[in-house]
Amino acid sequence: MRDNPESSECGAETAGRQASIPCCPVMPFIFFIVFFLTFFLPSISSAGGDRLILNDLITEALKNNHEILSAEAKTRASEFKILQAGSLPDPMFMFGYQNEGWERYTYGDEVGAKWMFSASQIFPYPGKLSLKSEMTSRDSEGQRALAEAIKLKNVANVKSLYYELFLSHKNIELIREKRVLLERIEDAALSRYSTGMALQQEVLMAQTEKYMLMDKEEMFKQKIESTGAMLNAAVGREINAPLARPAEPSPSAFHMSMEQLISLAMEKSPEMKIKQKMLASAEVKQRLADKDYYPDFTVTGTYEKRGGDFMDMWSLTTAVNIPLYYKNKQRQAVYEAKANREEAIHELEGAKSMISSAVKDNYSMMKTAGRLMELYKNGLIPKTYQDFEAALAGYISGKGETSGVIARLRSVIDFEMVYWGQFVEREKAIARLDALTGTLGHGVEEVSQ
Image (cartoon, rainbow, N blue to C red; front, side, top):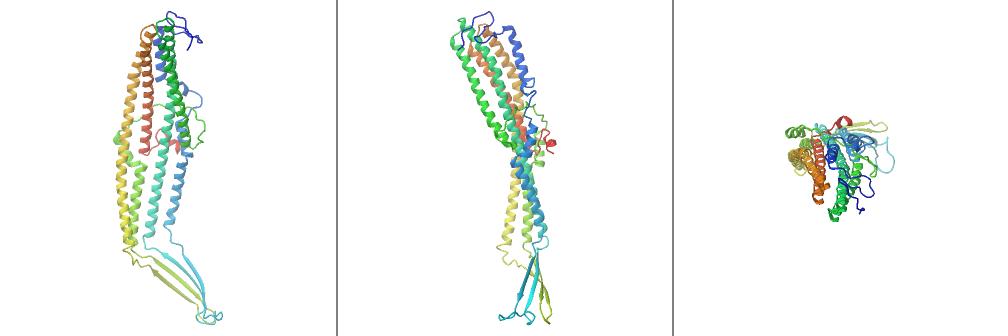
């Protein structure tokens, strides 16, 4: 505990500190400055110097995130399958020798001795190859939509982590600002204690509250470390790579209605595209299964080389596979394809409901957060500041109790933290809406092109 200060008419000088408690008429001006800096000017920490910019992080994630790169590589691999599926099976070449008897080499001496050469090619029933190619193309389109969904999910994750990191830094800033006010309460308590107007308990109460704020600050510092590690991983950096403080963002403009968002999601959502491509692929697979009732053809050309006076021979044959066991093979394959198509239909309908529900949920969260921000910024916080200002002014002049002033300051801190918490929740909800509607948002589409 600090030594007792000497009393004065309007303030007290504390031990180890030369500054004196400001006189009562100055207090409204001080609180006006604090409130103005907190809500109407950009944060001092975001002005100048290196700051973490959200769009830069998103661009970096699109280039370096391993999940995104893996999905893009898988998409390219699926595109290479399309031509393969539409190609004929490899032709077969055969060569051999036929000898008469076992006693000697009879080529040229006997009618049955000859060299044989043949080539064969399988020709699937007309329409099968084109269906296989179309089916593979639909699968590739589905993989491309999946890669886009992964990209949007990671962009939303980067945004969310960025705002969480910003919130932790902002809360530390608020705590440090309010600790200055708490030290003024402590100074006033020490002044009153030194003149016998207050008990030592009031001084201890103010000091305890200050240490509690310091405890909160350490918790937010730890959260900065963990959030920074996750953000580094999301953008493809080393986990322990240093991160600057995020630049203070402005509230994102958002003017679309819920109906417009749902309509946009039904049209552009990668999740919807995935289910649509799955259904298209299932329909093609069913048509291909129907085609398997029809046989494939194997055409074989043979040339037989005979020696001596014997004439060479050639032949051209066609082999046809007979779907004799169609009840256990082809028919069951058709049933399987129909069931898969029905599954794809229900998954598509389920995706519509799920996406609509997610859009409504996040839209409601965004709107609620916006209303709460307005309430705290223009109502609760200014009024609480005024209440605290009056209580502190009265306390410095010898009226009121420490607990009442501290309670009002605690309300100011809590309300400001809630305001910025709602700010972050609104931005995160918008980020999720961007992902649901198939857009990167915030001008990031132009950056990533």
